[in-house]
Image (cartoon, rainbow, N blue to C red):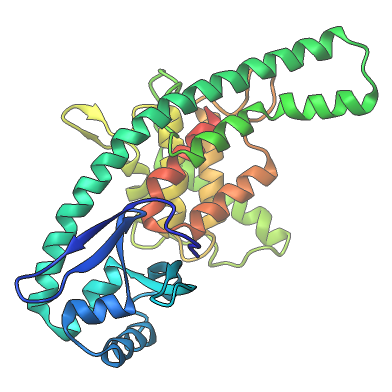
Length: 330
């Protein structure tokens, strides 16, 4: 919940006949209070409240996604926490109350949002440069820690703490990039990926199935294909446009293979387990499973977490999930 209007800006909206309404632009949307929405559409607050309740009751919108509380100074000079509703809610109410007024407001709001987001983009460019500088500082600090470990006589506790910090440097860097929306595909392998063939994948799945059934961890429907979807999944990571591969690196194809094998449900049962198997198999076939120190790039717990992350993620988060997987294995 928002506690104050710490970001964004206030602009005035006024249609040809209605009163002026102060509109707050923030978090890449617009926000209006119940009273402001009533003023906007020329309806009583009770009417607007009824529409809001019906919208939530029908699950057209979820309350925690479209409502925020802001500290607002009332006419009596006191500060109250007031519910504000974003553009999604305003549009939904507009369709119920007066679509013509709703259309006018949507056009106006979209134009203002475009300007607002553009300003934010300009600011973010500056933040990006600052963030990259911080990452370099973090990596430099890690080198200092390593030199300290090698040159000083430290207690076991000090050594343990510094070793944790240095061993997990990639974690700190990756999480920082994730928080700032800076995950990308830089630094991936340049080798031409080998194709994982359908028959090879099926043989590996059959081996896994027999092992799991023997351990009473699966039934006979495990690994049964659904409408040739496995062939489609394997083909999807090899697709290209204009003579160029859609996913040029080993890391990108492996990440998409894990994602598609889980999300597209190519099997009646066992999609997460089989998706994880195919992901590992693809890395092994492309000599990309082990790091330079001989250890596997993805351990047991990490693979479990990735599979669950993919399974529970929203389709809109696909690009972020794929970039995260790539950054963990590159």
